[in-house]
Image 1 (cartoon, rainbow, N blue to C red):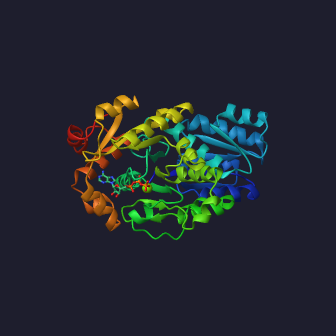
Image 2 (cartoon, rainbow, N blue to C red):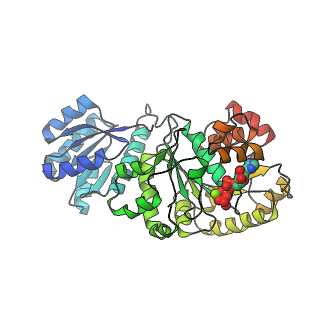
Image 3 (cartoon, helix red, strand yellow):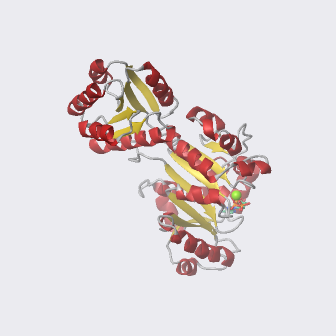
Length: 400
Ligand SMILES: Nc1ncnc2c1ncn2[C@@H]1O[C@H](COP(=O)(O)OP(=O)(O)OP(=O)(O)O)[C@@H](O)[C@H]1O
Ligand SMILES: [Mg+2]
């Protein structure tokens, strides 16, 4: 699980404190440590509860609130403050920030704004206090990885499912896989899950979406991986617009430390939204003409969009298969970008796992293909190269 952020709030007005509290209670990563209705008492509350961050509503008495912010900043310089006010005028914002607040939100608060502000407070706290290590990995924000293919059947779903399951093995992570191959995706089949809800349910309820509803919509696999599947009915695909997806991804980022997206191969607007919102885009290729040609074309398009091209990591799948008629060196030269990882061909293990509806870690944990995917997962997560599985794998199948 992700580290929980313990928050203390002060707001003398019941009218605004209630909705603020309810909003915070809906965020999985937040633990409401203390709630106070008097500015005068709040400093004692903070002394006793030592929260990770505090939220101060200004509107009951701006002067008292600014004084409190100053006091807290002096006594607890590592405890970041989020100020909230219905008056979003420049003067209030400036005064709050000058007094020592790190963030300012205008009430009524929008959930996404709150989540982003909390994330920044978390980063702020970890940066200012050297004793804090977030998530055990140093990351304060979710890692979002999109898996996109250079042609049909190149191995995207196999990689997405097995990378997701490998990530879910780390107890510090909270991992979800979202099937964005909206028409023909089969991540649910690969994991033998029969979900109650799909992305269509989430999209249909996007206006009243809260964290609890979103979490309930994901289906948990025994590996620990959560899955949000594609719509069951083809006609429901049209319900999912890019702005829905943007909102859903925003909320998922606040709830999960690691997200994996299995994309379609059609460069739809939802695919593009997912790639834009990703930290890493894994472009899966095979060593044959169509695939390598498409990699070049895709990179050409992605490079045109600022920030997208550099996120791409090329992963060559099925290395060693009979179908491969291009050498790695030639592929790399044609693509003009290094190959990040190579996954060996292992039809028996892969096909067997897919047929059984289980990940490789269950079906063929000792197989080289499984070991290679674990190594890739570790590399994507920024884990050190010193891990034994990776060393062994790199000597045969992998180079970066
Ligand atoms: N490394 C591998 N070795 C052997 N077979 C593999 C490997 N990776 C994937 N496969 C096989 O290739 C086939 C296609 O894989 P998969 O469904 O993951 O591809 P995809 O890119 O998601 O396809 P689609 O375009 O249908 O979404 C499957 O039968 C799978 O078992
Ligand atoms: Mg697929």
